[in-house]
Image (cartoon, rainbow, N blue to C red; front, side):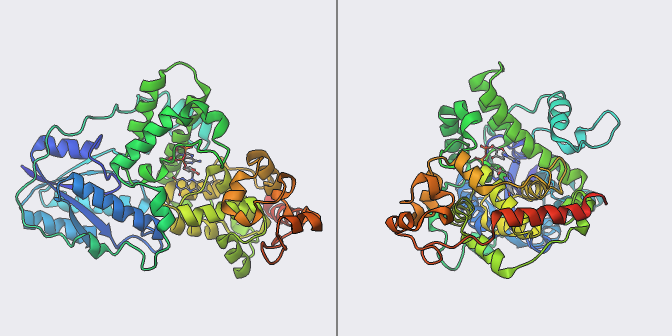
Length: 472
Ligand code: FAD
């Protein structure tokens, strides 16, 4: 038979369970839909749209130009295509975002009620959320038991599949709106650095993985916290768009380094575990996208300042490690994990602004913006999440900078106006004596901002605000 293969967040040919099954069944019609029915603010943000454009281009090349691309509502487009192409079968890999689950369940029912056959698969998680539960049958809320007891003691993740031996395309009319109809590229050219940094698509993902395995993987435990070093895999956008499955990463690592105890490898695999945990939480607690996981925080007295938010977004807070991170985000569409935690803590605690403000800015700027990881990351930072950093633990960005960017290389790269300051002051230019500032060519308030807030006083303010909800 002829089947529709509906690509979603699995923009790859290798280890794609739905594609394999569709090709085993016969000829395929590959389809992608940019679904405009996503809830407000949940269509991909600007950086993600650029990525998606490039990734679809690559996938279409890989499919010899057979990918048919549509813009509109999947719930209408899919049944129309099934009729137009005269096919009774559709294959897809499952999504876990609450709105996508609702959409796909309703569509599946509608199709099956009309005698169509829906074949769905797990193409993006090592362990699907519905299969992991505590002994009492409730969902886990704490990471370590989730990973160690739930996941690692469940059945081993699927070993990656070889690509289909042969992909045969059905001879059907081309109904595609075309990639350009999605209008994913920005009007103004702000994405040059992003373009120079990343290679979207399956081949780009494979390159990143092999570079990581040959290079940083064996020092991961030590180097993953150093933002000036390429000590992490940078696979997050590839994993988000499914240009590579977590199974491919998991087993590439295991095949190379074996199963024996290795701190670097175990730590890296457990980061993939955090990705699983975010998806797990999103699946079991879908409200966490909009609401505090811990409802005690509903009473929290957040403040809002347009001026402070803009300074944070632009990397103009006057706190070097925070500014470096925010500028890395703007320039590269990505930020180092350690620095995500630092800029997050600064926004939520020192500036006392709601984690939604940060989550939304990240959503627009990150090439790896991911509903599960971003929501879980922000709720973790805010202290309102499951198994979160306690609210009273306020990161001191100066000490964080001095510890993880000792030589000030990261700050110098993204805040070049500070690069001539001695190391002693690069994370706290406001403490530098006038002659040292002068030698480094800096006038605070002109070349680089004065600190937006006093770190001590703003920490105290945050703790007092927290005290108000602590008992409740
Ligand atoms: P590596 O260290 O090489 O890790 C390998 C993979 O494991 C990553 O690609 C990612 O898929 C997963 N991973 C690593 N750390 C985490 C983590 N803490 N939580 C969940 N998964 C993890 N990650 C996103 O993919 N999308 C987001 O939108 C996102 N938003 C975040 C927001 C905040 C406030 C914070 C604190 C973290 C966020 N993260 C997000 C998690 C993490 O920062 C990134 O996954 C990581 O920096 C990606 O870099 P990497 O691929 O080099 O990671």
